[in-house]
Length: 154
Image (cartoon, rainbow, N blue to C red):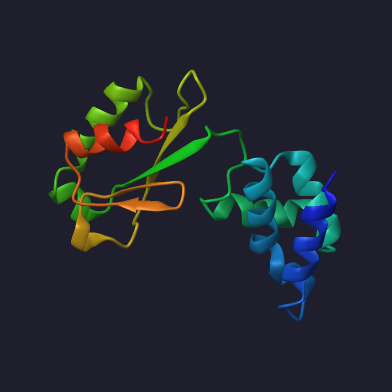
């Protein structure tokens, strides 16, 4: 069930569009901001609020890779795997991150602190290699910078 706050924010998002269902991504992001991810039950509630078929909204949610359809850690690390980042050392940094966190791509640390996900492009080619944690972009990365960044998320 959607919380009163979520309902209020979704109604406000719908006001920006001629069709309710056009607010689909906005509504899913609202729920995710409050809950961390979008469960099947919540997706059905959002679909009802938007007068959509749940399968139609699920196709939107699964297409847009920044909507999380399963639980994630408190902090989501998106590591850019674009060509620019590959050329600038992505593979070594990915190995360092996986070793440091003790997880593989798509996994969450045992303490639930971090989830590591690939991202096709963060739009930071001039800062390659790059990663994003939650809404914070980090570029020109090396192993030492990554260690310092991770320490700041305790």
